[in-house]
Amino acid sequence: MASPEPAAPAIPAPVPPDAPPAAADAVVPTQPEAIPAAPSARAPRARTTPSFARVPSAGGSAGNRRVWRKPAAIAALALLLALQLVLADRAQLAASARWRPLVATLCGAFRCSVPPWREPAAIALLHRDVRPHPTLPGVLHVSATFRNDARWPQPWPALLLTLSDVDGRSVGARAFVPREYLDGAPTHGGLASGQSATVAMDIIEPAPRIVAFTFDFQ
Image (cartoon, rainbow, N blue to C red; front, side, top):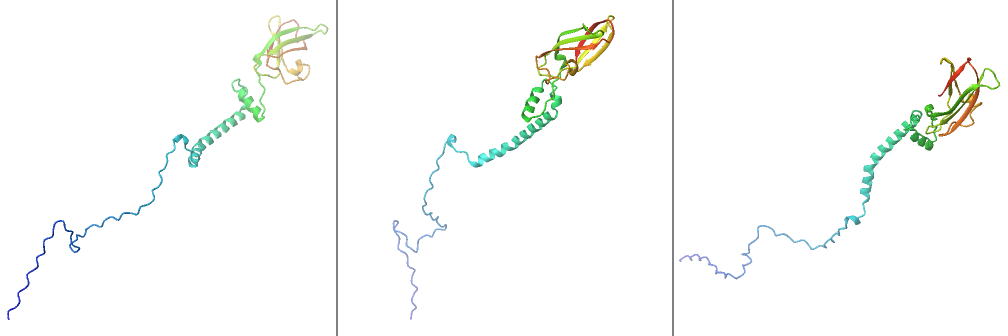
């Protein structure tokens, strides 16, 4: 008995070009396709506010304050130190015509005392006279008129009187304090700026033949 011959392999029928591929013959992509995300609500578009209409944030103001705080503190401390130096040296500074107005203003605000202004060279002698007393022998009557030409009031000065004889020799000199030529203590603090005063006193003649005299202020 003859063995059956093996069946010849089936030849696939030709596939038309426009026919869809079979399920078994579909090509599996090697890369997974991207899965589209679900649609979400779009955020509203921010509106741009003009720079001149923007309100400064609290953080920016605090930063500016911190930036200026240190220089302001340094300036305040420097001013306080300068004020203390001026008040500590007010006696010396008040003797200067340049610094006295500042010292007087500060002491007026802080209620401190200002030393009196002393400028004997600014006292102008307007009139002077030395003559024998009309009723008392050996006594000289001295009179003088002077004015304070200083910028500020100053205390009554000491009056220095020097007497000379006919030969030009100094025979006597003495500085008279205000209570001596005013015949008592001054009734007010001193001479105001531009104020004039006339004083008179009697002194014992130190030597005969007094012919010259000079006045100075101290």
